Image 1 (cartoon, rainbow, N blue to C red):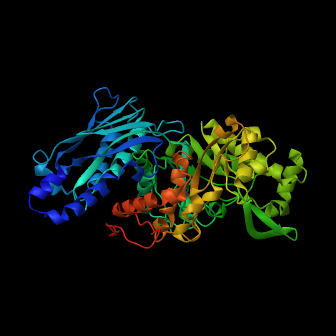
Image 2: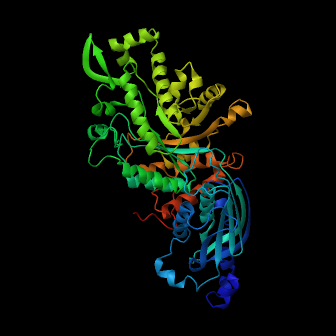
Image 3: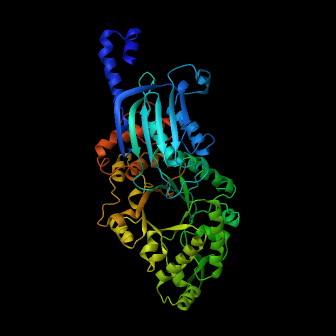
Length: 537
């Protein structure tokens, strides 16, 4: 139809007809393989349908458990309309019922979980069928529907003349791993709330579903606690500006929820707590030198009952602020030298029967914190150091593997102990590097270890880590994207279909251009250009 119209309207003469057919063929061949991350199963056709912003609608299916008024889906409809039609402006509103053939995306979900939060076992499965004048999106939950809307938005494309099209498509899709996270460190450099919200947007475009908020650490304590306000007033870089108020935290959680993203807080201890001690006296261990206090402090003092009373009150607050059932307790990189120097700590160890084995003291502390959070109905995650130094591993639930080397060897050790694993070590993106090294993050095989099927099911996913030593709001996005998207496809898509870097490369290049058009400062992958370059906002 488009060829006939263009030729007879006189816009093209017969010598240009061959060129016109090549242009149309080029865009007709843009199928579902342009989607990132790649769906699990799909069929697509060169048959395409015109879309018009003035005659495009989202709607609820008649049998859908969720209907108009569903906060998650209503917000998604508003959000995805300008993503599908980037050239759309409200000035076109008066034409909405006038121009073009109507096209409706009908969304149906099996469960009305519109006002809830995404959980660790929430289904993200969806089916999407695109045909003439209609797209049908069916999902078990609203979270699956959000993933399907993202896929549909990526199926829509423009030709060189600005017209919008979508091809006939059928998709059945679901994530390969349930946990697909990104860690941001807001202690070493403070990240403004707007930078976090922008990252959440980009995460949704790549179908990440967990924001691991490493919110405090040695350098600063930016979380403003209502129970212990001195922690931020004395421990933040600047207590008036470089903090996250309770309102800020609620804003981040709400923004994430509407995109199907869980917010997983981390309050790392007993190490990485220097900023804590500024606002909470007697929390850190006094270090000794020559039999006298040196004036410096080490990790949290595990010998005082007041330590556990403080932690119980803090985590009670954290559990009331952050709705997710998981909480990250850290436990990494504990330097025993200060504990060894302190006579009170050594006396406590003798009383407890630990002798001179400081790994037992560390295990005692971690078990105590795990018990506190378990009483609050929270599942604890710890860094792999805890697993390495722990004899009673049955008290642990989820271990995050971060140490470099043979990551599959470390994963295998943890699953053989019957514990769940989150893989992070191959996906540390905080160090600068050429963008074209995205392939090293793409060719990660989380299950390529010798083990039973039951053991491999214990690998619940992985996450990209963006530590903050050399990262702040000025370089967060370009350092993160599009390299993080390589990990996103590894965690979502079928491994056999996405084993080729060469086949993935043009799709990632196309996706990077899409990120630019959506306002994400993603670094270039190769020499070249995008049709719509980043304009900056």
